[in-house]
Image (cartoon, rainbow, N blue to C red; front, side, top):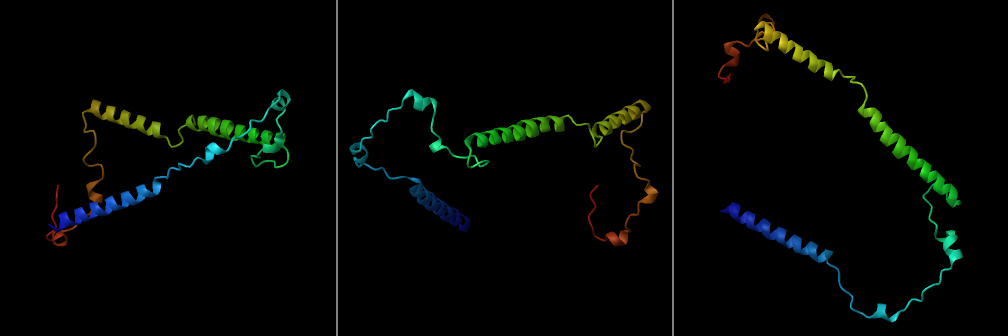
Length: 150
């Protein structure tokens, strides 16, 4: 009964938090007519202005704050070196590196050993993989009432 009570109280708390968060996300709609009252006058752009834009609205990429041309050159060369050379060619180089951990060799040797044991009629894995003389087992007194699952 207490579990049902806890479940319903959590559901109520969750519902309250969802309603509170939804109220914070909802934006109010402005119905004033102020935007209709102001009229913007279109600016006339000549062919000369269009061909030669003024750099007054230029924003630097952070490489050169005074010269727009140098800033663009530095930006393009930086992105070329980082993206093209480092990411693309670096990934290509890394993907085709030789197997330095010898994973392929170990797997190939494992398959060859399995094939040799099958042809010889042996078990695939020897039950005496570790020499039984090297293993020391606890005595019956040490185990006492410990359950042993085999």
